[in-house]
Image 1 (cartoon, rainbow, N blue to C red):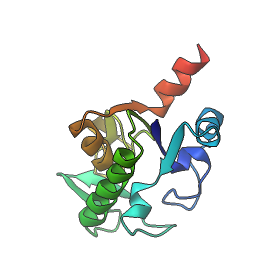
Image 2 (spheres, helix red, strand yellow):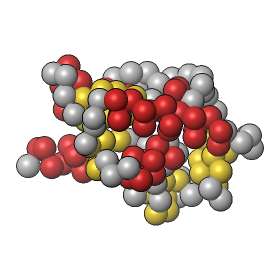
Image 3 (tube, one colour):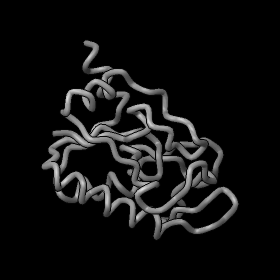
Image 4 (spheres, rainbow, N blue to C red):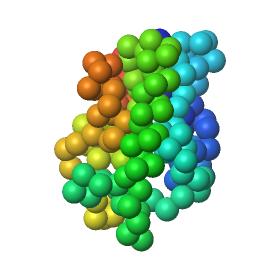
Length: 144
């Protein structure tokens, strides 16, 4: 079983109220019962739409300077609980997100610069040994 970023499955939960370029492969996994979509930000109590956030010095900060670390941590714990409940062995997540970013996230300056690192939810998944894959890599691998 897989856990996937809800925004990739067509759910309008991205910070700007949109989805994240719905991926047909992800939608199919959900429809076939092979994956469960989660949005850690919403599970942490954040609204849609919401002010964009980035990780800055291990805190999750909004573009206007508010600390949202607690909400991101709560959402990550709740999403992890779902992953464990469905016995997920793999997660396919949205790249660059402060929650779901895999291997690269924005640098905390809101200048669209990327740095090596993982989002809050991704870190939790990796701690418990759930394989985490960036959606771009997943789609590329499935199309080959």
